[in-house]
Amino acid sequence: MNMKKSLFTLAALLLWIAAGAQSIGQAELKEIQGSFVKDASTKAIQNALTTDRDIKAFTYNHEKAGKIDHFFKYRCDVKGITNQLSSGRCWMFTSMNVLRPTVMKKFELNNFDFSHNYSFFWDQFEKANLFLENVIATTDRDITDRDVEFYFKAPVADGGVWNLFWDIAEKYGVVPQEVMPETEHSNNTAQMRGVLNELLRTGGWHLREMAASGAKKKALEAKKIEILKEVYRVLALCLGEPPTEFTWRYRDAKGNVKTLKTTPLEFYKSIVPKDYNPDTFIMIMNDPTREYYKVYDIASYRNTYEGVNWCYLNLPNEEIKPAALASIKDNNPLYISCDVGKQSDRAKGIMDVDYYDYASLFGITLDMDKKARILTRQSGSSHAMLLIGCDTDENDVPVKWELENSWGPASGNHGYVTFTDEWFNEYLFRIVIPRKYLSDKALNALKTKPVQLPAWDYMF
Figure 1 (cartoon, rainbow, N blue to C red):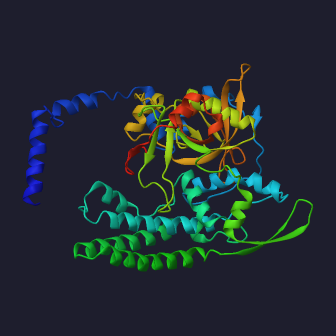
Figure 2: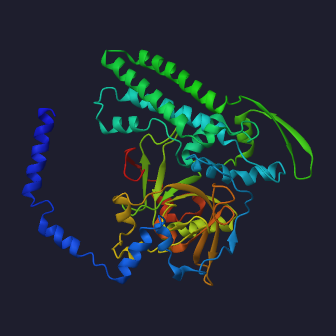
């Protein structure tokens, strides 16, 4: 241990003692051990938990049984369930699922899906370039700088949000699934990403060494291109090379075989609505840790260097729900993102607060609100899906909502998920919605200058 670190450790220890901190002594340990009383119910719980690994099985709240159905008063026209398999591409699947009904209607199809492999290739390639550019931009900072640490922690990942799909589609277009089918490494991304991240960390380290030795920007950019050639090679070997033009043969709903010859960008422009862009659609967040009716921008959260950052308007749920309901009534499904693992019955496709009662099983206190869960890292958005339905009471007030998932038809309610309005309040974080459904107060807030947040912010 060096002298500087030793002095820091000693100072921390002195502060800890001054604050009255103390270790667990025999008296404290005896008090704690004495609090665990093995009465009959405690013994029964211990016997159950030590012989069955599934804690969740013992926490199901029986009071919820039969209370939640899968019927909805309002529901968008959707068809078919996709499957992202072992990848973090939910944001890409959900963004494309918004557009699938439009493609099916345009080409008169019974079934259709995009090539997520094609879009994934360019997403990873562009993220690699953005990482290297961030490295070059921070070569004058210490390797322990918080931004630099964040960049090197995960040079590329397969996660993302809606603006990343828009950035990549606007630049490279999209193609039908048959044109560039999935491969083992698009469906199971971990191994390929491991190789890419090691390659990029290696390249990033060499760029920093070059800069430290006095290399100019032109030399660093030339080195970046050499690294990107290797990135492209890894991607092409694992995913296949993306086409620059393609011929797509398909059978329409009437049985006619048709042929379309085009480019990925031309195909995208032909199927995407003209108003499908960040000027019309806005990411809404419900984040009680920050001021509502404020616009926030997350630094460097995009994939293309020239693309738009993740930008969102923070609103209370009382503003979000009427807008979401209006969109569903107009047959417009919505991209949403939530903490899908919390209070979720994956087999039945149901999410509801207190669906699982861990506090009663263990006899403990679990009472944090949404703000506290976010700040303590207990809760955060983990999965994107498509909001397609809403059920309301006699006063047209929402009581539950429906999602189209991308985990295949065997998951949930044949691929769909029902969640209560109470669950919406606690675990739904993001929703991409056309501005026309927002209130005047929300629209006025969009005119304000965004507050920029660091890429390593606790919410992201």
